[in-house]
Length: 151
Length: 209
Image (cartoon, rainbow over all chains, first blue to last red; front, side):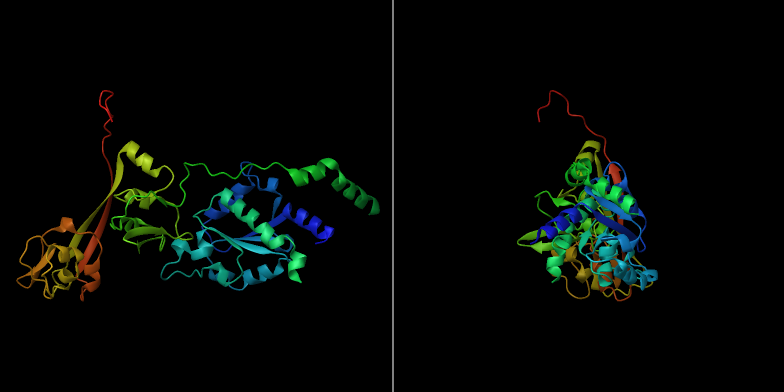
């Protein structure tokens, strides 16, 4: 592995840009993502920065059970994120639909049917520490040696 | 342009900046022990009361599965919302989560399940399917056959004179097997959950443990 690759891995592990998308949640998980930004958990001390622009993002945080309005949109949003990229399902809703996945409801979980999900954070809502751990745990498997793995 | 780019690069070449970028001290990601996590087994034997499944508000979050000789509750992550109700509802203390159990012992609170059997006399045709399907009846009177007649008074319900007669409502375990076997939807089981609190008896200093 070249020195350049080492430098790239080092910089990428300290600089992850996160974008989050709410595909129909109750706002509980949104608040927990928000709590990651607040001083107690302070997501930026880990080198994770939040953008709301998928074109600048490395990691997409998906929040919420999948509502029909996102049918065409989420795929396009995922395609806009430049490689290397990963999506993390935050909370029960994108994993199973949780309490919304009942007879007669219009949600279409899991989100993994629509875009590839790299990690799942169960919980209703998950704690900020768990969200942070999930982002930190996928950074090596997704971003390290990405140019080498692509070949 | 070239000048501003130069100063931009100089900023990133500063020692303090590189040190902060690579060696920033981060707080340990620790969840306090009193936070409610996903319910964990305490090691006590599950008695298959199924109160955890009855009280659970999230669909498909908890199942009681047969394992080895006994039963074991299984929590499905991604469905469980960590409300801790299964921990409270379990009469045998099989699960624990955070300090839910400790708070219950401290404050003398518990969740009490009771079951009511409601039979619509207009719909019931006295076929006795519910009496033969009932697993508690099967234990009380193994001789009970089709028709639901029984010689013993120990059964929950039996067919008497072409009509259903409920004898021991308090023995019902709320499994709703009778509801599924009824061809007319005449029988309905109500699961009633009450939160109760008993006065705490402070142990006197003389009394030993």
